[in-house]
Image 1 (tube, rainbow, N blue to C red):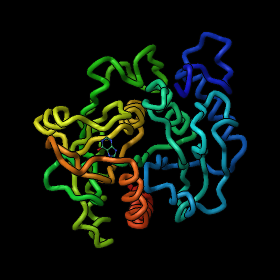
Image 2: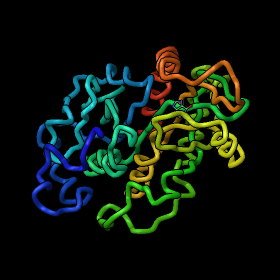
Image 3: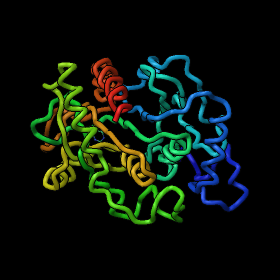
Image 4: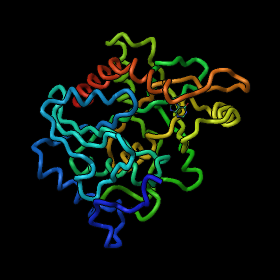
Length: 300
Ligand code: HPA
């Protein structure tokens, strides 16, 4: 396990405080806020292929995760884990370079806790990207799918980042999710895609999260396809659920890095190298797309 569910750099370890509570998250946020002049409006969580976005940030203030009190710490060797604050095309942003996945051993709340830190830093809008397997028969490798809805499979068995005490200062105990992925942002994304000549690779669909780390079985994929799932992956939903709960408007997209194998005996298989390779190939387009989205999202 990457983590034993304690905060190593944590002030709340000794106390019995809820690690997602306002007071605990406020310690992380205050640490950052008192060490930067930037007041971010938009948060970005980079999935495979988008790490390079950080290079576009002008004079960033950089916070390694292990220096931020109460913040989850990545224990995976070689894993970039830092927050960057700065201006991207004059828009104040905060970028999470390196995210936490459940398959690494993190509790779901921990994978999403940085979103609450963003909230307390003033973030009102968030962009979340990921690598996803294409289950929709019409999707090609390299497509960019705007997430219009999701199926939170871990949620079917009580695995939810918001499980546990609810701190009303973030949001209500029960809340709707029918417009979790802001329809205005998706409309904007279609427009941006057209402006960049990416209309041929732009898709829209339903994303399902599975725990991983194994890719899906054929039977699982057949079931998911019947359920109306277009792409599958192992991330994103903890962050988008927590963002929506605390009133952050959400845009999310999947880079389709592989086609899901839905037949037995196929000589193709899904592998991590392919996922990384496609991420790198589409990286430049994705970087331009997200940059333009940030500029436009800052105006609405
Ligand atoms: N399944 C799950 N997660 C993934 C996939 C996939 O096919 N591709 C990239 N992330």
